Length: 345
Image 1 (cartoon, rainbow, N blue to C red):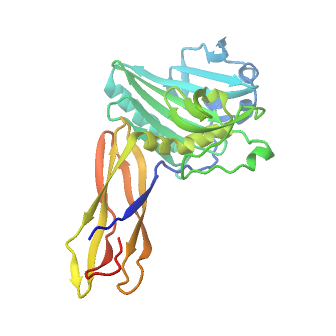
Image 2 (cartoon, rainbow, N blue to C red):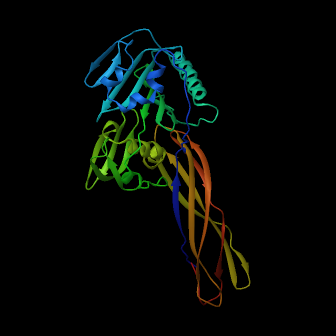
């Protein structure tokens, strides 16, 4: 007897973020990252808050000229900040630049520990890494800013940077809009001052260059994070794991039927689905969960077939780069009629 069953899959990925506040002690350039009042200013105005520091500006980016820079009493190489629409949009600290992988990895672990310590015991980090050594990200979300530690490898050269992005409150009319984080949906994106907006759906985010690709109507546009509001940066940060999953994961589904179990007129066939998730991207994708709905018709022997549904989920955790993992759904005992008459499927 021929029959048909079907399955619907929902894929969730990405690490949730946690808002919390804290205070840092000011040492050397610590105040540039932690004294939040200057974030409401443009770079030139903010630089005047630190008159003992020698500054230089080029192309809207302000940087410290001093060679002997320290952050929390640890040596760093550079400090830069950029602004748009009258507010600072990014603070970037160059920590390490080396051609030695061991030196790079030691610096990475040190600064991860430093940041976790500065965030306090309840600080929550989310990380995505590349098995090819290309890019490593560790992120922290705070009440007033996003922070990320980014490691890169290019042509045998290794670099480690610390990035801060302030978060400002949107106008009341914009704050009423509710974002959804259980999928990728069309939404309204805003300019940094919330004066301009457009509707679109994010399809890709390049964390290394901080550029988002957004589907707008029949075209796809590339937008730098500097051109978007803090609300949009927050949204992109929250769905970045799901974007990586949608672009890097492939799902293969195969139906598996056990040997039929006959009991009088009824035949019960235990049916399940093998779900193989393949990560084709060079990056690890974190906290992956598969949710499924299985739809099937079941014979009632003396009546019309009944449409039924069973749901479940599979927790996969982290999926490594260029890796595949297979899990099975719960089995469904589908009842079939063994003699002529009404039949389901």
